[in-house]
Image (tube, rainbow, N blue to C red; front, side):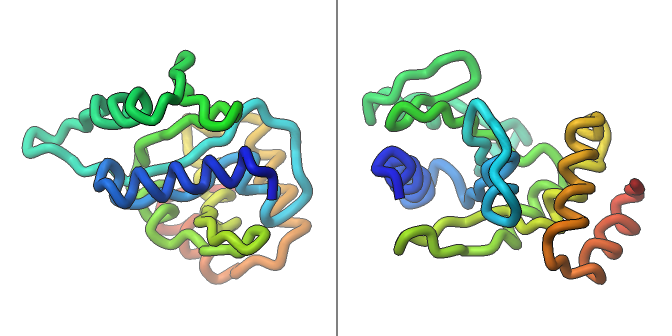
Length: 164
């Protein structure tokens, strides 16, 4: 494993250990690379479950305070960890929350890493407004090239009103 990627995994685990996030899982193109071939990407997307305040709002302040304390630069929507732009995204829908909770823990060069399962990647990429042509192509690729739990995928599509 690249030392830089190992730094990112350690940082994500630190976010959870400090209670800044409740859980995390690698998402997007990097997650797809765990299940299928790598595809070009600029950054690492990480879905997180944040503690929600009594008002129902998510306070990102602790995330950026943590980044400052660790010496990680912020650039636009990214935190730069070991030269890797990491976009930490609060799970925007119930489907995304479930994707984080049910993420697979994979072994990556001896280091455990939580990765969104392919069935959930497909479902999230078919969910508006994310259902653009590029994401539909990613979803179709996963559907064709990966051993899926088709019952789970069908249940997700039905439950969330999604289709190809």
